Picture 1 (cartoon, rainbow, N blue to C red):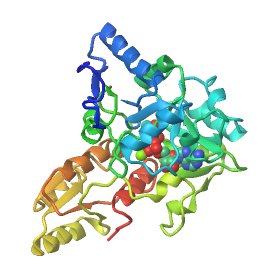
Picture 2 (cartoon, rainbow, N blue to C red):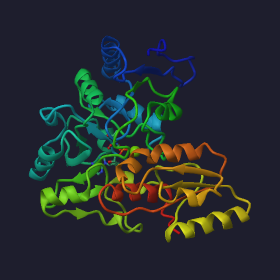
Picture 3 (cartoon, rainbow, N blue to C red):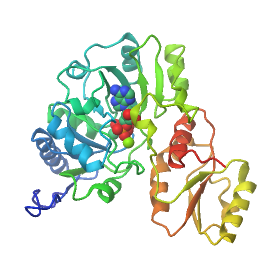
Length: 360
Ligand code: TXA
Ligand code: MG
């Protein structure tokens, strides 16, 4: 729904009345169409709009305009050395973004696009410098989400978009997460409901002889190995002391304001951590699987994230669980650990970032 005019509230205030458009399936077709068109016009005017993708919500701007992309960095409080992913709606649009398309990239495109995988390719010269943070490569993906694809088509430009959260906070999987972080700082939000995957895209560098996994995500390492035979992994994914090849991976991330700890050693260990921490006068929040939740009844806040039998549900609910616990009156969050297989690698990668590497 359009909530009124978008403009500066006062001459000296850098606050905006953020527009909210409901474009979910339940809304009448012509209302949705009008909202999508209105949002796309703002992109053409160089403004910033949040939109849903199949992974998380993105904060979009015209990828060919430094002025527009600068507003994305400002709204998020994002470090300027962290490049953005460019979103496209067709393979033809790749010509506007990539200087060349390495054969590894083409294989990934053919197998997984549209979908939750970003390829790093040589950057086209017309891209805004701020998008690539001055690198000669760019991350690009075609999202598997009808609203995202329609929005990019209507905007008629490739759309640069990081996740639509304040820098360092968990990525948004619902429009109200975006509003919580960015209301008053951006022009509008397209509300497409809850995102499906829940964790960001996989990022793969395709510029070398072998594909290099820089960030695990919606497409698993096993799927990539099946397609390409062999891939390398950024050593920083397994060794916290290495500098990540993907600039964004070096920051603490996905994190609530209270400390998060990953607790190894099974449920008995976690139960004893709850008791000893409470004995120190601290209030404990726990992220639990269905299988173990009953054991943690003594916690001050308990969030059940799903069954170990269904890791995709755990991925889908992860960020919203971190946000829920962030609103509770607790001093520390303990979380179970997960397998590194399939989407489990991405879940553990994000949890380790949220925990700043604190595994106990
Ligand atoms: O699923 C996603 O990927 C979401 C949705 C909105 O598409 N976007 C997202 O963007 O997660 P962001 O900005 O939160 O993460 C982009 C990651 C960062 O770690 C960044 O450093 C990396 O991609 N990246 C972007 N361009 C790169 C490049 N040229 N070389 C290496 N890493 C790059
Ligand atoms: Mg992000």
